[in-house]
Image (cartoon, rainbow, N blue to C red; front, side, top):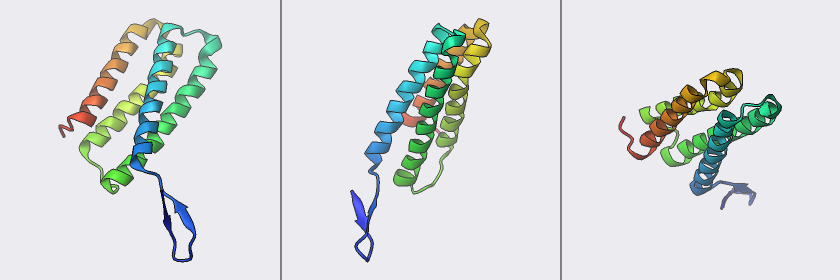
Length: 127
């Protein structure tokens, strides 16, 4: 689980499976809270929703780049850039649900589309 320095100091290194678990878990939290914001865009829940989606988005960002470093040695492919764009679009949707509640149907369609494109990029890697 760690590597040793020549003087015997042990450094913590994270296994890629932990990055994957953190990434998928934060995706589930982000998705659930975003669609909860679509279902009930009440002003009372705005602050808590934006905090939770922001933290989940940050954890997705950190774990995603951790996986890139561990699994791909820091080399970016085009599918990774498309996935980052989908992540940014989906991250903005919770805030937009509170600002534009009349567009909830269109925003949820955009959210489903961003999720679908991100999943295709991960599993098919077409580009």
